[in-house]
Length: 102
Image (cartoon, rainbow, N blue to C red; front, side, top):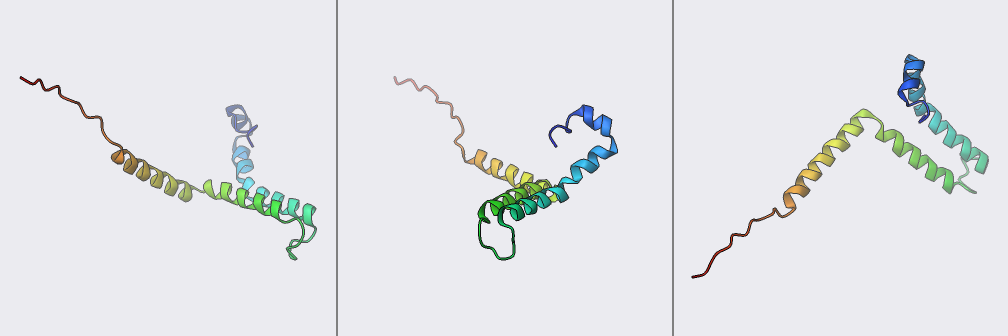
C-alpha cells in the first residue's frame, strides 16, 4: 500500500488506485484469518496457538477502524478539546515587576 501511495502511482492507476486502497478493508481481515488457519488449523475450537493471530486481528481491526471518517473526526475533535483543556491548565508566564524600595 505504501508503494502505491506516491503521486506517480496515483496518476498512473487513476480510479484503480482508489479501488486498490479500499480493497484493504476486505483483504486485511482475510489475511489475519488465513494466518490464524495456518497457525492453528481450526479457529472454532480456540485451542492451540491462537494468541498471536488474535493480537494481529486486534491491531488490524484498530487500524482499519481508525481509517473510518466518522471515527477519525471524533478522535480529532476529542484531541483538540483535550489540548485546549491542557493549555488552559498550564501556568501562564507572569511578568515580574521590579519594585524599588525606598
